[in-house]
Image (cartoon, rainbow, N blue to C red; front, side, top):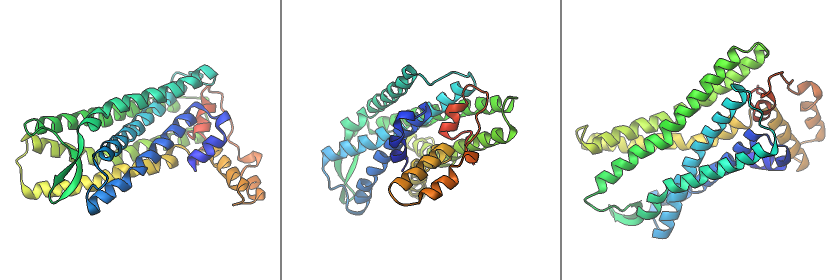
Amino acid sequence: MTVAVLLRNRRTLAMTDTYILYLAFTDILLVVSLPFWTVEIIKGWVFGSIACKIVGAMFNINFNSGIYLLGCISFHRYFSIVHAVQMYNKRRSLSVHISCLVVWLFCHLLAIPDFIYLSETYSNGSWQCHYDFDAKTTKVWMVGLRFFYHVTSFLAPMTVMFYCYIMIIKKLHGSHNMQKTKERRAMKVIVMIVATFFICWVPYNVVLFIDTLQRLGAIARNCVIESQLDIAISITSNLGYFHCCLNPFLYAFAGVKFRRNLLQLFSDIGCISRKTVRKYTKPGSRPSMTTMSESRDMFNSGIHGCN
């Protein structure tokens, strides 16, 4: 629904909406790869080594792209509000597409180890899609990739998001040009975004970090602990991946303009009557514009126009 609504109104998209469109495509591609891993759990990897490389790389590319696009949205909102940078001309709109392309290419570079080392391997009585490292360097590679993941796919994006949203909250709180109700709404959405990211991804990264320490020998190896870590990684990774299903609600459905366009789309395909659309899109329901130069983009993306 997010993709359908945004593409239907692509000529009037704000810059943040464009990021959200790319984020929606990324999340869809990430979810598309999940059935392959489900089959692997049930029957083992039955798709061959080439599919293992492609699906594994695609999963990591879209996972990293989603994280970095969230960082781009945060960075864009930071400039729009804190520095009141106007972002509505065609040149800056083109910069959004270029930024998303750069993110996509960078995530392909991060996936090079997947293309090289992922392979169909026979382990514990079934075929699995795993990294196939040399026996002497397995530990070095695994630990190195783990720390690289912690920095590039969690700590760096989280730091950017936290800094940007903290500065936005300070700016909104100190602004005398905004109504208090809009300020509270904006802060509520920002806190919800950061809290959701934190709740979904911190448990997985903590468990993964503990597992990495055990592989390094910093924590004594124990069969019971290893078994519990395997279960914890499975549970917390699912919680993290669920975050991509929450993104539309956090970044699109919260916006008044998006909900209005969604109702219009439902009306066009005959799901609801035009009377219902008019009821929820009458002039009194439109969000008012503020005097701050960044307000238009924030209304469009759902920061000030939320309930």
